Image (cartoon, rainbow, N blue to C red; front, side, top):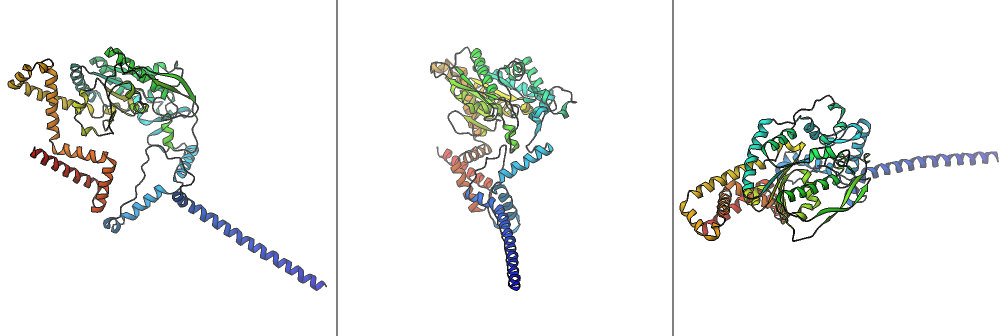
Length: 499
């Protein structure tokens, strides 16, 4: 019996060792399976799209899938391009980017957002606004004087035809919150800024202007609601609405007209910033929101009265007016409305966005009553984004055409003899000069090619077909766009020759 008990104990011990070995193996398989799952999850998430992640904020440029060609294959570029594409589109990428940014920000105070800096008490700024306030980006009196000379000439031209020019100085966050600038700037003494000198020149030359920069600072301690957000770079939505209301009343007083009412019937407070009120923070792409104070959001209402005046509005401006355009107030209170965003794209009331080089500038301004040039202090170094130079050159050319027309005694006699045209001879002269200017500029091959290229790129279906054609022919998209533009230009010449 003792022998049997010994054998039984040995068997039990052996079973325990086998179970332990099996348990260890099972644990290994479980750990291996979990690791494989972790590695596979990004690919699974990308393909199946489960757990939708919040898109990254700011200016994010993701690499597009490369087009295989014999050249990039044999040169080894295709593999590198695919590697960059896969890295930019891997599953959970947005989460990992935010996790990385949050760790760097929380542990080391490092911000992964272009030109964004943090000031005292966590206030966020863009470097350009700080440098603009301190005068570090001042471009000099000579440059500004030259622009203002041209602007003074344009104001006289527009006033002669019943139009009003208004320069609008939008506020800047560095100017509004100098007490919260980063400590690194405490030792820098403020000097002449672009804002200071542009404002001085407007005052000395009699150029109409609205100084929201000064107005916002004056209201800072008495405003019922915040005029600037803590984690955004633009005026708050409440501050923007105040500025729009002020601009409308200014135009009414200037033109002696009554425009449709723009007002608000209530105010909604929110602890969470909306729209672009936290645009800088969004660009930081953190996991957790930064501390901020409540902001006010007006509940707007518009008067629908067709009997009231709605002057045409022409605006050249930066992202501060882009906010206003998004609000929709201008298109409801004014008549036809064109917004030249940084003089790069045109957002108009009755058309899809187009490029400025697609249009005749004097003709575009002709049916407008109010011309607004708007800039915050951070963008004044490039005011008004090339528009002043172009407008000055175009109107000088129109003046030359007018002088040539006035030298044509037969044409002048014919126009004056016409009783209808004689009533507005100056208008007839200007319209004829603008038409001839438009014809001359459009006859330039390079201008017409740029025009057709913009038309192609501005139409998504058309542009997609050109990209497909480029792929089939093994050329770049830019080369294919130029080829199609040249074809259209030649067809236009043939059509003109046959007429």
